[in-house]
Image 1: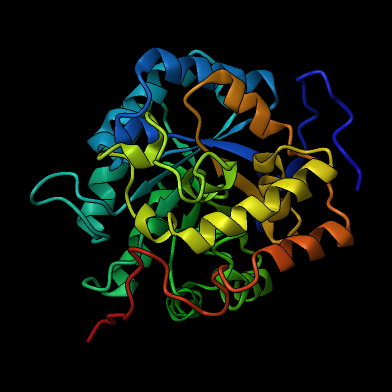
Image 2: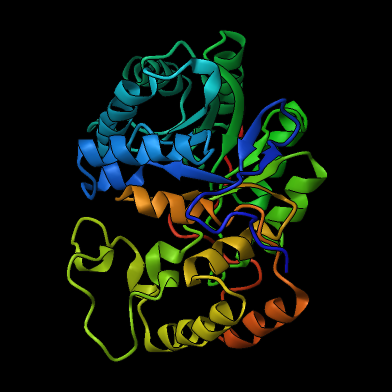
Length: 343
């Protein structure tokens, strides 16, 4: 295993090409879901963002629905203090912005991109993503609306999150493989499902993966212990932040994570660094999106860039996770099936 050349708390960030685009993104990126959840205050968000720049993180991922605009507004204030060409900015559209505003209709995409740009204090985003698939709208309408956003110069490139292989292929059949440059699935040691179908389909069409929850919502940090109460102040202890964690906080999973700890230690790594290096082993990945509530977490996550795990370590991980990791084609949480076409 070749480790990161810095061991003094610094990092040497590496960058990867994003699909068929001309964008290069940092292997570790910073996401703003925690801002949406109420888990990070404004000054902490600022401190984490500045720490990201300090360690070479240049890719920032948010969504209009996070706090119904609050996350975009926070980053608009922070990122606008930096040169626009010094970072790659991504946001998403789909979620419920009001009682009557959600989804991927042409009207919503046109309205929501303008609102996002206003909050983000920028003329364009580098990547505009469908946060989920909208099976209530003809896919042709959605594709054309996204293409228009690019034609208008409001987004440089397009992506999607948690689309099924059938939905991805349908969009490609309509607009060709250059329509999208990125896919954003959940992916971690514990959720390996995208490897089965989504990764190969995307790779064949020049689409990179930007993965979310690479630490399985914090479970792969080792903070949750089998047979012990959930730590106070942790994500699972928060009603607003725990989300879909019930399926992760089970005794078999927590026992498997315990088995990973000595593997990380023998490799000279922390458990979170091992987990991030594990997802980055895949060449299909462009970046792993991480969240943080403190600058030191940003720096620790960034240290996973450039670490390569040996075959012996990978084999030990597979053995430790036998029977608990989700593998094979599996519908992701909150994903939708089905496709509507124009009549």
